[in-house]
Every structure is written in structure tokens, then in C-alpha cells.
Length: 343
Ligand code: SF4
Image 1 (cartoon, rainbow, N blue to C red):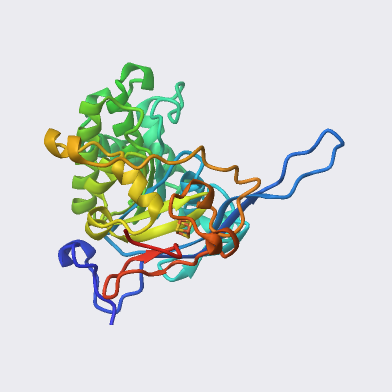
Image 2: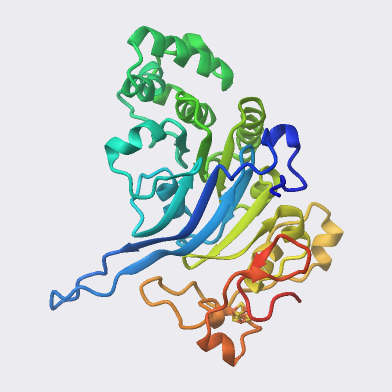
């Protein structure tokens, strides 16, 4: 029987037992064409995302974390079909959408929306807020008057002043501009919002306000989020489960409490050891794990475990055999891709 993960209130999932996940992603891969050499020959395709699989329940937030270039944003863009996957499956509400044509995708598009990192550059500077928020509705065939009324409602819902509906993006602060981006994403009443680093371009004090807003909207509107970020403190706050990505693959995924309290993958342990602790004494006592070198290029990933050149625990098998995601702690719904998980 399918049950909601333990830390998500049943009221938030709104699910009957046995309900399939809202989103089921299997073996998702994105390979970009290789660069041309000086002789004109094209190199091997570069796998930005390499066999990513996870599920997301209605009302749930999955945090997607990892260093820059790990493939988390590319994954997010594939989920909303801004990028077409090279291979793999995306089942949304039970229906395969990974390879739908733009026309066949249209009825699903309203349920899958995205919030972008830099609010100002993601808003058309020549459009008023009314136009920016209304646009997805006009595409769906709404009348201009109804779309404008809905835009005003959404401004209020996201903490903006509806009387500012005829203003332009440059007349708003960064936090307000991100509220406009969120309002636009909600215009078509989506079920899933993919938020790609939605607060990383904002001041710290404003970040908290936007995170509060997103949490309130999730609870009030029954949204589900894939929340992409490199800030593990923010991800811990908003997520129910967390997936850690490294070089295009998920290396650890599970309930956030279990993952943050007892990370099993050496990469997760290193990332978490760099998160500042609120207690200064604990911060002084804590051992930091320094990662060796920079992440390898996805154009030439190391054989075996792609983390092995940076891993202090690496052994011979790590250099030759790719570890698959599997349950590392009996009884825990957490998977880890490591030959030697744990301490
Ligand atoms: Fe480190 Fe080996 Fe685990 Fe990879 S498989 S993370 S190299 S211990």
C-alpha cells in the first residue's frame, strides 16, 4: 500500500491510500552534443543528466541540491519540458509526457510551471505586470479582461499591491519581482512548480520572506514543489525529501531528517559539513570535510564512481564499478549510490 512519507501531513498530501505519485521520473537523461575540435570533429555527447529517477507525491516538496553544473537545473527544465530529454520517462499524473509534441503538451503545460532564479531577467522589461502575469492565461484562451482580473488576484495572493498592476518590472525590488514571477507561475493553477534557485539572487532577509510565501502557497493551494538550490539550509527548511546530485546523477535521496541527521554518501557528508551551525560552540567543534579538487567535467566523467577522484574513502572497486542507488540503512526509505556508505 502506498502511504505518505512520515513527515508530510496527510492533509497536505490530500491523497487516498494507493494513489500513484504526482510525478514519476525514470532514467532521465540529457546529453548535449559534444564540442567540435579544431579539425571539425565533434566530441562525444556530454551527459548533463545521466539516469535520474525519483517520485514526487501530491503536496510534497523535493529539494534538489548539488554543486553548480551537477545537472539539477537541467533536470528541472526537463520536468516542465523547457528541455526535451534525450531519453527516460516523465510520468505526470500517470501520463507519459517526456516525448509529447508541443501541441500534445499544451493541456499539461498549465499544471507544470517554473519559477526562475533571477527575477528581473526572467521578466520581460517591456511588459507591465498585468501582461506578464496574464500571458499564460491568454495562451490558454482566457479573455483579456478575465486574465487581468486574475492577475490582480494573484498579485494580492503573493503579497503585491494590485494597484501596481500597470507598473513595469524595473519599478519593483528583487523580492517583489520574484513575487511577480511566482504569481505568473500560479496563473494557470498548476499542480507542480519547479523552482530553480528561487531565492539565491535575493538578500538574506528577503530570502526568508519568499520562502515563507512559497510554503504558505504550497499549503493553501495544494502545490507540489521541486525546489532546486545549492543552499542546504534553505532546502532543509522547505523540503520533505532531498535528492543530492553529483555529475548528473542522484547519489543520495531520502527523507530530509534522516539525510541531514545521518548523511550516508561521502559527498552529502562533505556538503553538509560546510553548512554553518546556529550554535557557535557546535560550529567550533564540528569537523569540516574538504572536497579534493574541482568537480570533473561531464564531458569526461571518471570511470566507476564519478566521485572517486574527490573521495577520501575511495577504494579500488570505486575506480571501476559504478555504484547504483540502493537502500543503505535497513528500514529507511533512503537510497545511496556508494560502495561504502555511512561513516
Ligand atoms: Fe567514495 Fe567509493 Fe562511495 Fe564513490 S563509491 S563515494 S569513491 S566510497
